[in-house]
Image 1 (cartoon, rainbow, N blue to C red):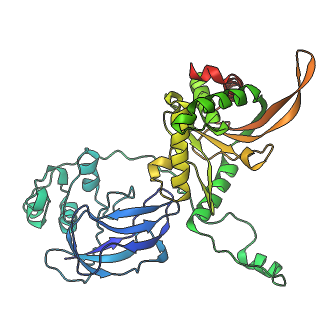
Image 2: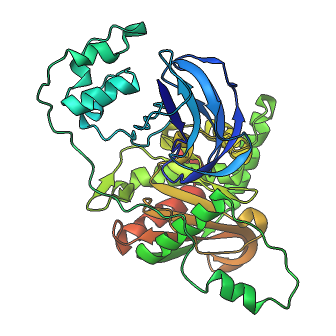
Image 3: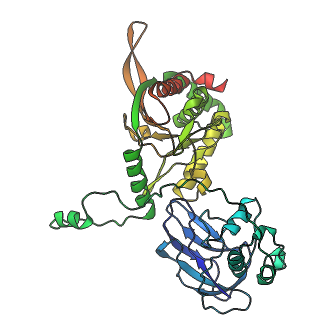
Length: 421
């Protein structure tokens, strides 16, 4: 029997990908769990793992091909002595790395997986089970490693299957560009001017779509504070001297991450995300930090940041940033979090307003520390001041709560030694 191997959806936002490399060739035997290809998504290069066993019959999409739509047939796997001709049912090889729904519209297959067990069955067995209304989770397989095959389901009797709980429908994020003048209209306007046309890759399309949606649908409001950094800079210099022997050098950004993580604990109602018809509040502080890469950005997440030392946060952030720039982050490393930090101060920007990345409830825009006149005890002195702006989703956080959160961040940064207590 021949089975189509389909381009998987390896991230929630993936609509197409690049088949970067085949790790098998036609005629190779494919084992369950074997990595057969590398696929570039809009965010990273990921490995593609097969579950079914067989022989690679035909490779339909050559490596290096870009713009391959999700669920497009990329190869044909032959099992049970079949031929390379694809069966009309177009069953797909299950992939461990993808969260996309299986192309077989059989609730029994989903029900078996919802029970917490992974069911191994041939595509033909799955199709027969779907036609007969069988729960694959109740069938004992006689194939290799307990795999369910055709003979196991042909003699089985249908049993009632409990309804599968499903998530409420969520509007899909389209990767199409925001509305505005058409491509033709813009091209015509600049027809008499020299220009270079830059094609949009998957990451840039997703950034455009998601941030346009965020700005249009999330009710932003903005809170601004100036933060004095002199105590922090002195404390940082002292710590770095003491940590020099361990090869650790703390950045101001490390202190900002820690300050925000602790502030989310100090104002727990703000440690939340918008979930459509409800708000989810968290007990741990998972802080995302924007990292600029060529052609876009990542927001890797530092989980449980409130309980980690400054040196641990510094080491983890350096590792995440390096792998982000190499596009080697796994999806769980850049998805999630309830709060984000965007620091353009390192580029000399005094202040700016950041756009919230849904479902986060807030993002802190960090400007540069600059020398300013400060009034202390009735006298004018020069100090280092950093301007920050907190963008807040008003559906989740009200004005007073947002003010409390930003005040907590300010107090943490202006009293850095207390963050170690």
